[in-house]
Length: 301
Image 1 (cartoon, rainbow, N blue to C red):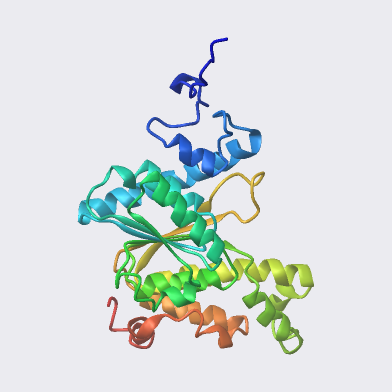
Image 2: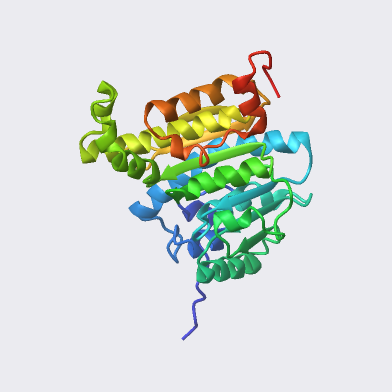
């Protein structure tokens, strides 16, 4: 009996969501496609989220390329590096100019797995480092400046560490989806006793559930003010529909060397008003911004 060879799915048999030129092997390795090239409902949702985020990041990549060849991107809290691999597949793999994606992840096993996958796919412009976000700031394994910094669902203060990294690496663009912001809420909770009665505003976080939600909200407000105090233009939107994720706030910051005095003043006013003065070091505004905050004659750096 003649043996029938199994053939790969023809392009037209692939799910319509798959874009021309995408690596089918990659999508299977990421478990977005099944072994026979199909999409289930969960992977279709995951792919939709990645595509949606890519539409925000792609213009930043193109803008950076117009400024200079060789884009550098650092993805903090990379996990299985879904974002990094998709970005490389859709944008970086066609470049031949030294562009590079660095995935930062603390879990050694995920770093090794991502490194192996990049090698199998021939994605030479990807590397993965077993570091915390804070450690990566001083690591000699990364270049002194970085064009684009991403941090998706970096939990609690890891998002602030990613902002610190981006500021110190003079990032042109920063893309954040914050997650599990608990530090500010813990300070609000700790100071609640002495703050109650000081102002009617304390009613906003008097109840524990409100403390948690308000703490999360004010954390992102402080992050935006901090970025503005360093000269960035900041936009805030939702990443995907609420039916997909509650951790949904997308913050995009682009360095424009904007005036810094006003956001620095506002940030410190918010900290003072809410009794969060001890958080000033976390949400630092830098020497130039602090100088502007105390000198009305200075408007820009």
